[in-house]
Image (cartoon, rainbow, N blue to C red; front, side, top):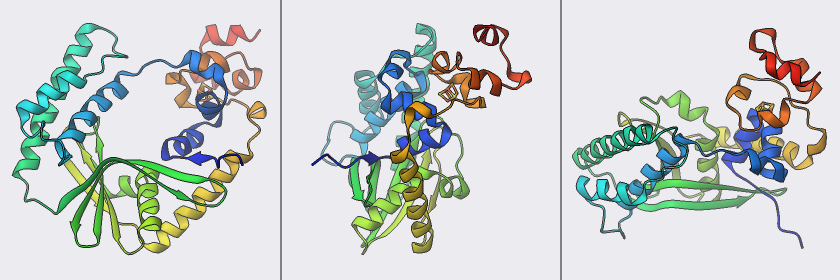
Length: 269
Ligand code: SF4
């Protein structure tokens, strides 16, 4: 029997941003030839690896700022930076973020305990499996679990941003369906400032989200990828797959005059 298809917050947000981008990221192997390393992914993943060790009670190697800085040196990913100077600037910023974050964590009153770090959970929604990889889950009181998500590029965060963040909703939905007896909330930590906000979706909000995810997932599973037409959108300016779209006449027709690149328009003639 074929394995059931799986969807994740990243797949769903990629599809919502642009179905053609979804095609080249997950379906069409030509897309891999155009993918470029991104410095912001490298930066975020490097910090996540250190924080995973800092918050993992089984890892006794990263408990102080000095150990965190040493761990950052060990796990630093240098792909995607434009120059060695840019990379060194980012490394310096990463160290400062870790030092500030660990100092803030150590100064905060301890709330419960960390249950898991970098944990993947999944739930079967019928037509597909929904899965999510969660940075950290804390048990803040008996039966109360908090999903913690680090954002390495953010200075601030608000409750509205969490409410409108598909990943934060999906993490709560998955955990609530797997552990219905627990109260689940989701918190984003903006690592640059240690600003944080938290939201707990109600059962009716989770039901609405589940219905929306089923509808979007149904569209993804039913898509005929060869027929998906690229249309210009602001995202195109930073998209790795633009060379694949830029020769398509539908794509060229959709470019507004204000965003037109003369070289790109001439390739269609
Ligand atoms: S260039 Fe634009 S239309 Fe093409 S995949 Fe990227 S975002 Fe989508």
